[in-house]
Length: 81
Image (cartoon, rainbow, N blue to C red; front, top):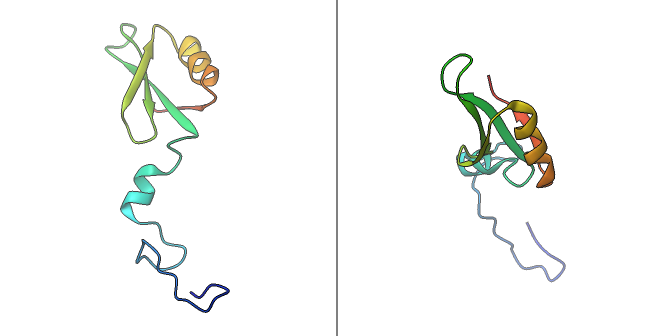
């Protein structure tokens, strides 16, 4: 690719256009979403709040509280089953 000065611009990714690299895929949605999933046995336990890359960033005693906490931090909550 060339810029206005006719100099070649290199890109960090060697992936073909439209194909995400493994790093891009791992970071996709990182600043936008948080995943909420039940932890523990059926009927016992709590709810884990995880970043898009799987890092646990919080917890809550119930699903509604977990979703509220995620939204309070300007993220979009998604359920993991």
